[in-house]
Image 1: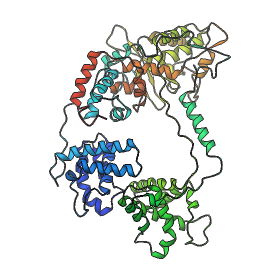
Image 2: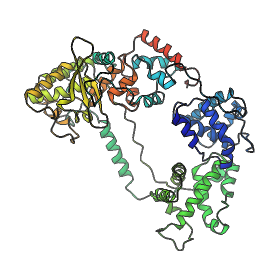
Image 3: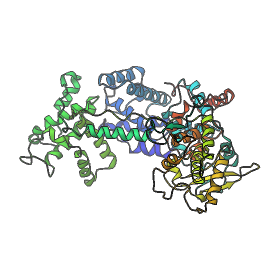
Image 4: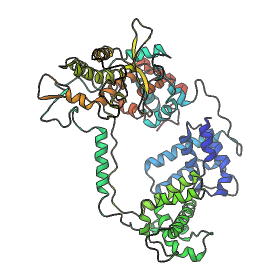
Length: 593
């Protein structure tokens, strides 16, 4: 079992169960979660939190002894729990996640004798757990995705690939390390990556004049139309900021206790902390009840736990130094005073100074922010829409870019556009990477072939790595390097611009590039050059770890976004991937929707 999973379970303390109840249930809960073989710490946290929420409700546990999880986690018990979630307003997707995890735990507890700890996880077939098995697949990622869809009955999603990516990040060097650019840990794999060809994508052939746009009708130079993801995010954030500028927060109407479950409403109204005297509790009670009701607790036990946290917070807020309008130290707290955005952070700092552990403070922050959000009726702007990764260029478009780079009117323009096109299509480098590439970032390496390959090292930025340049674009990059040397720019000089701190390093290249017509400007998107390289690498038979390291990726988002742009893989390769997934146990119950 990964040590981070065991550590996460040891540190977990549920907010929905009291200390004595957790002392009874904790050992059995941890044992069942471990028996479910969580893939990582987050998976373990999701399992234990949903099981605790199940136990916090009226599931049949008398709370006088350890719960019999094998008996409680039956179909009837799970169905009743889901009905309670539906009644409390939980979304359908949330209920489905609870159903899947509770059934997974029920399968795990089925093989455990009552009252016994979970057996240690059996050693899975080599090379390791599910994430390792997926990561050890040496064929194209496109074949793995197609096999997954056939076996699991649904497309490969980010949540499927995310744990695999997290387990592989930083483990495999693509072809050379930034510290030693000439070393080659795996020449055959690097040779395969160097030979990767542009994929025949689903976008069809190049349209007429697709690499140029009219200056009169063009927006920003270097764009083929539409907003970049960064621009869209900036506009959305500006709109959100503007939407929040008018009159401040407005107090929302109180929740209708009569519409709640009678037992839950009674628990909210009758709750009174024993540690607060009746005289001090009376002016606080209404505020606390309003916050607990706004939290929408799913059960009586959760309501009591939330009430305890809210009561301490309200008590502190009423007596805090610098309170805006207190008539006296014990003056009743108005709900409007709690709409201050920074109040929870100030309270958290108070708890930290008092020595409250980080985990406990994080739980309190989450509970209080949810409760306080129910007070604010201010209309919130729509959330920022998800911006998928831009799709790749076709092979015909890439060939047109290469011709355009080679036919610029001056050596400087030819060199700069050749670097952008050659390293974007050949090594997956974008503007973030090109800022950190100098003449001495390149080296020849032995790929086990008749001629050496070319490796480029990105030594700075947030994605340091070395990657072999694809053979199809290696000549263009070597021509640009020869031009750099002929201009006597120096071994340590940047290949683009003069300063590594400049962010828009590729924009001037596009602005200065020309076509045969003075009224047209080049419209090449650097992020799509990188996407084209990524798709080619995803279609090549290389391990996923090599792909991640070569691309400098730390998440599965780009890979999953680009899968829809990849051509259908070879059926024979998909058959091999299916056998690999059968070995990993994919699609055998837990992976089905």
